[in-house]
Length: 350
Image (cartoon, rainbow, N blue to C red; front, side, top):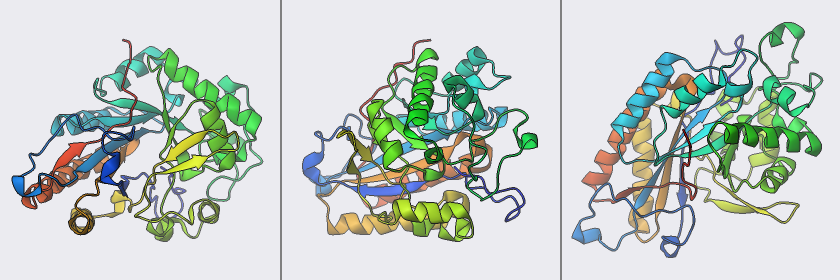
């Protein structure tokens, strides 16, 4: 999520519910670590018993700015609305590191929304609170996503998350990511294999350091034409053009060979931001992929919906209704739906 400057576009936010679709060949079912066939949420009729399913992947990004009761209440409502669906939670360590943070309380609050079928990844950004813990100086000399610079007055409590993470050098990135993972580990999340970077700012340098730290799955890639009309007038768009021009709404998960010869599986956020999509538009998008599945019934699809904790109150209901529509459409067309989760399981100790 990248919030537009408050004086731009009448406080338009880029907090997103990302929907993306990826295609795997059926031979990968049960073999690829991203695929799990343990739970069937809709019985497949005999007429399509040999067809590959559509896997639904759900995620919530916890960006580190606040833990408001009304947003947390909505996340709990989301969980109750989709029993049996695991959710991938990307949690920022800033909740535990801010100057006024209450780590034990934050742990209980966040943990109260996560089930034992869920997985936890790390949300990476350059909050000053994280930098301080990593003993990395804040890059005030680097422009934010919007082209301006941080001032002393803009950093009274915490700041820096709008400075691209890839503005930092490899040595600093190593410390930032290491502290981020260590912080989550200290809060009961010892196994973190996935990550997302704020503002989609993952270049070769960030990917390499992430891989060296043991991270395997990157949810940061984004399809540019889906966000162009929101941010094309800002410097962030030019930066993203250099990073993700090869990504389309139909990009499959793909492997990235880092400079350290380690691999990361990149999972692109291929669809439009649901903040700006009506339910009808979401439905139309899902139907378009049913058309693709009809043409290639043996190819499994992964349909990924994500939301942000910080805007759950505004968009959580839309998220719920979108899932309900998707399930209804799938049932009508006799399409088997199954949940997808990453290979790591939530092993939080409480």
